[in-house]
Amino acid sequence: MTRPTSTLAAATLLALSTSAATADELNLYSSRHYDTDERLYADFEEATGITINRIEGDADELIARMQAEGANSPADILLTVDTSRLERARLAGVLQPVESEILETRVPSYLQDAGNEWFGFSQRARIIFYDKNDVPNPPQTYSALADPAFKGKVCIRSSTNTYNQTLLASIVTHEGEEAAKAWAAGVVANMARDPQGGDTDQLRAIVSGECDIAVSNTYYFARSIRTDVKGLSEHRDMIGWVFPDQDGNGAHMNLSGGGVAVNAPHRENAIKFLEYLTSDSAQKYFSAGNDEYPAVPGVGLSPAIAELGIFKPDDVSLSDVAANLPVAQKIFNEVGWK
Image 1 (spheres, rainbow, N blue to C red):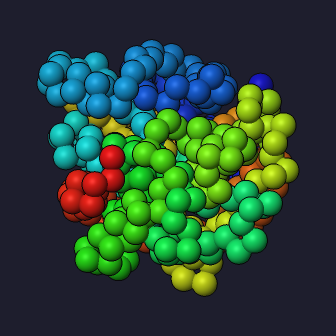
Image 2 (cartoon, rainbow, N blue to C red; image 1 turned 180 degrees about the vertical axis):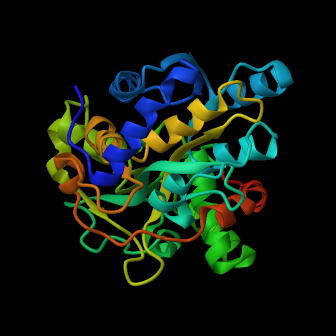
């Protein structure tokens, strides 16, 4: 069933439908492992008559596979989560530049690669959560996470986590390498435990009392509002949250996005699919189906996401942030962030 769309989105889907006769397949390599994405694929197939063939796996494995397949790769699209992985794909040479008025118009420039090799389609804010009973004055900025006042209170994922890599790279972009290194060292000094587990585990650690402050992407918490997340949903009332740096750069945003494979056998269909992901219907489903923020401005939020409140996002160019990922990893190693 086709849902109502804006005039631009409707025109996009109509254009997709009328040009589908020249080819009827699209080979999608995806590291997005969300059942809710099935609706996105089904709607595209219904609107265009193009059948999506999917191969799912870890992002690095898919990138390596595309490299090994070379010119014979059947991949048309690579979809993955986080700017760092999109940049790895670009540097690996498995993506190609795309010229599309729809993509250029719909996706803000700071959410796309400077060379048009990847585009963002949904976002998650990486923010601060805290125990409302034990933290009367929670940190309001990322820099405050390194304040000695919070020594022994912070839970955060490991340095191998792509979300943390991109967060630190954004701090390098804004403040420089030395300031970023001082921040990372301060966070290590304030950790309540060695990094372990995923974002949901950091939130559960607040519930268990193992830490008072945690860093997590918003969609992990929003999911506990929309559905029953064991060990978290029943204790949500004790957890508060802060969108950091609202008087400064704004809250750091992690990106989910994709690009056209360098040897795409169905290149036109691949571009149509990326354009479809910017339609209002697809953008709303990113929010409603997986508790993410739309990349396209003006698209409504799901109730669970809306409950977190309005905030100022960091609009730094993620292409610039991606360039600082190697520096971020070097800093993690130097300060002993496990």
